[in-house]
Amino acid sequence: MKCPRCGSEMTLDTHRRYPLEMCYNCGYMEGRNMGPDAEKTSNFAHLRVLNFNETVVFLSEGLGLDRRKVEDWLDDPCQI
Image (tube, rainbow, N blue to C red; front, side, top):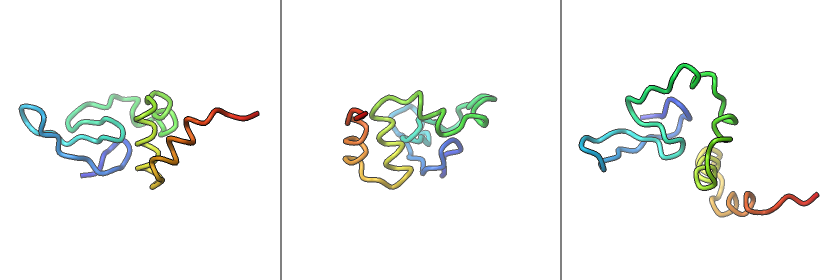
């Protein structure tokens, strides 16, 4: 099943009383209302609210990049 928010493959989460499909890239859970603003939210706006680890997974899975390279790139301070 594809995630309606980010389009990546969802995983069956069996750690609850009843199993749910969950997207580990953006945190969407099956049956959860995304709200009226979710369709207007771009990937860039969603990316702004993610923490470091979520950002690394979102970029590496979504763009098919190496996770270590993304971590190094995000950890490196900007040189001006």
